[in-house]
Image 1: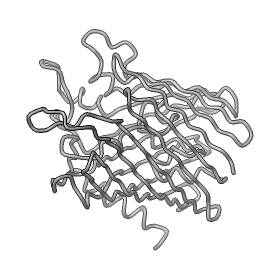
Image 2 (image 1 turned 180 degrees about the vertical axis):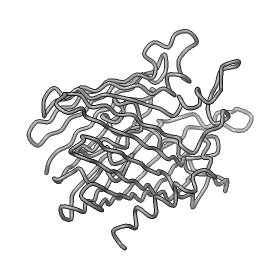
Image 3 (image 1 turned 120 degrees about the horizontal axis):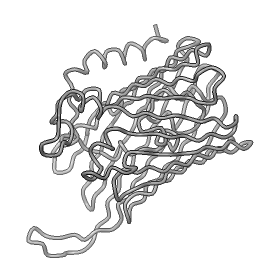
Length: 328
């Protein structure tokens, strides 16, 4: 019975997902959507099916933590808008060959800003920051099925105001080594605020994601297709330009990201990805360019792991993500 608790919990969430609408305008703590994993980002976004060792992939699907077989300490940093600092740290280990645990912290600082009164008079300055601290546990339910759960304490402090929430992520990962195939599903940001700005309570940015990763036999390639926002299927849940087609096909496209790993050796890979929603919503009219595209690489040298990705999130805005991990 204990072994199947994670399976039952996630199944219950998926059954009820049709009644949930986590629109971003109704949610808080949007920083939880920012990518942490360079490998994940280089494959297009919220990848939940890449069963590789590391210190960051499990943040989008806790079940992926079961891929680790050593004790790791990880650090991540992301370049974002000017004046913003995005960073984090992770620690992973295992209780035994079937049970793993991890801790992670995420930090976003938006720098110092002007503080004004209602009439626009500058009264000073203030700082704004978001922090999330989480603990993850994963377990090999069978030889081919892993389940995981993460509990997060989330806080935002903007000037003198503070907001606090408790969040939970659940995930499953099924893999078949003979077919070089893995399938993942995750429900993230369940929970809610226990303290809100000015007592205006909002939802966490709840999301359900699913994905498939396939490695053709004897080929140095691995393909991943992912879908997120699986509780959101109305045109009003997404952004469409005036007069733009908002039919089912365009809505479906806004759920999909895809990517491919080119494994040049057991220690070195190059990854390419595309997030179709970012490409559709953030590109300038008639000039999509590389918007929504991403590229990354990873290197494994002894006890050190290094991942780097570059993503074009808007016509004039891009970002770098660096992950370092050390076997301790």
